[in-house]
Image (tube, rainbow, N blue to C red; front, side, top):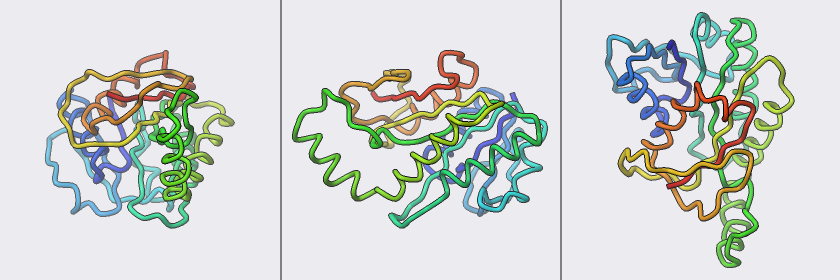
Length: 211
């Protein structure tokens, strides 16, 4: 397949690029700073672009089979990277006639009913407040995807990310909470992102994932 990856300079995005190349896909990585991506491969094309600047991403999406978004921010300030960025990606996809989109969100948006009380309090009073701006924008992004037409989208909600090994031994839950979601390695998250491209069970769905 011909894949476009946004956020390839981040920990998860880089793993997506590496694993996609290992599976012999042709990868186009759209990054703001090409020099920050330390990958080299015959099937890898690196294009400078910014999802908040639509003209810079249109050419990258043309002629591709799927788009994988590992967009993220490293600050706790208000942001529109997830919502406006994904909206711009979808507009470029619409123009190019590309339908398949896989995006990352966060398990922190919701607290499962079976979460122990202490853990529930930590999530609501600490984590959700600490990352409230990012979570608010992820929520806007998810709403935009649900209300969109003409796309085959998947939202993946991972919990805490680690630099652990690529085990492929993870659990998923489609359109329902995943109990005891504690964490997942970026390598396993990338594995599922790539697998989900051709998995109809994940189409028009929110998927929670954890080790």
